Length: 212
Image (tube, rainbow, N blue to C red; front, side, top):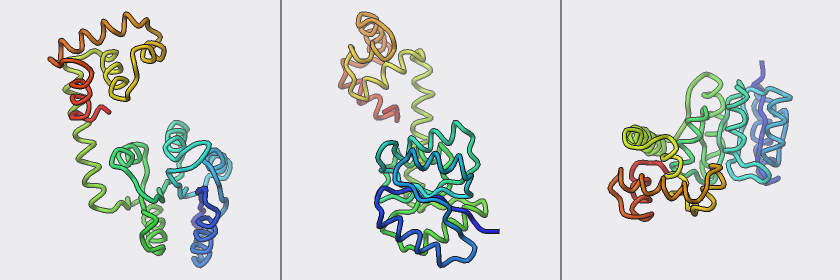
């Protein structure tokens, strides 16, 4: 039985190259080509392929949006990320969302074919150095979350994460459906509990514990 693939990349020449690469494999069939994340989601839902080869940087809906949507849907399609570069935090999120393979575009094309076969066989394919950094970051984030939970309420952790994301009090209040005064009270309590002096020190705290 053929391995059925959906290809998703916003560059037509990359889609052409990928389709040409897999056309050489007798047991692999490309069932759809997609230029953006929405098309990729629709193709996976409609065709239920074995593997989705997904670029992280795409218009309309990026790769992480697609991964989150497939995760919520409980999709059984394996996902392989094909990207020019992947930041550590992106890789952590990809692994959390069930990605089974990560291949950089600079790598030899044949490695992508090997990756697809490994993934279909139930293995995970991620370059060793990248996975080591990602696991370290994931462990740091989990430890940071536990440490924060010991000192802060869930609402206060939300406020910390939004401050770390660069949001001002007015925007935090809008997103959490609070008044600016309530946000200020939360910040006052957070500063006191963590022993930090202002937003800059709070940002450092969030970065050190992987809350950003």
